[in-house]
Image 1: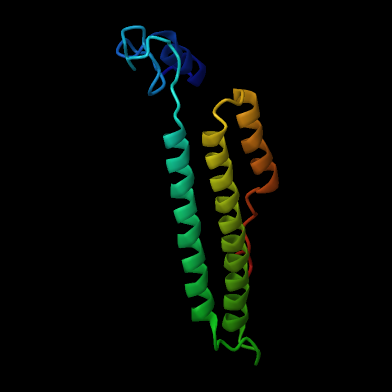
Image 2: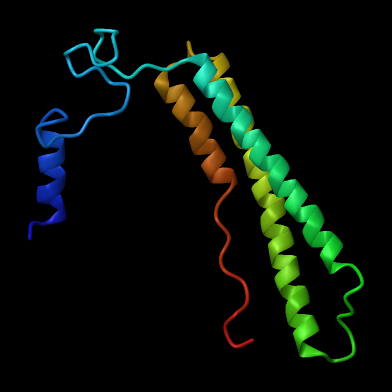
Amino acid sequence: MSSFAQEWAQLKSGPAGRGGMRLAGADDGNGGNGSGKGDVQSSKAAWTAAGSAVGELSGDVKKALTALETGQQGLATGGGVESAAAQSEVYESWKTYLDKLSGRCTALQGSLQRAGNDLLLTDDNIKGLFVELGKQYQDTPAVGGEGK
């Protein structure tokens, strides 16, 4: 069995069809994407469609959050019932997670649509949009479950 480094080197070594790898949309020198430029192509429509899809996901997350809040109504957490207190803690962690996820989707939607509108920007500027988004929204650690 070969190592990861050996397999990766083999994948990178040649064009597709001969054990190599290439990006979808990249010209393989044989008119693969019809551009003859030998690079990956992008379009404003693709960026806009991606932004719209993420925007729809944000709407779905908000619907899920509403359903979660509706299901939580009327649950008594007092009275010393441990399962109710644990359920309340799980609810709060999911509420926090879904709130942040919705915000992340909204921010990502804006970045994707901006990238589509600003195709004249350099690749470094577009990458910077997503680096900043990554700094603002980091995954949250798991909550509960251990010793509860």
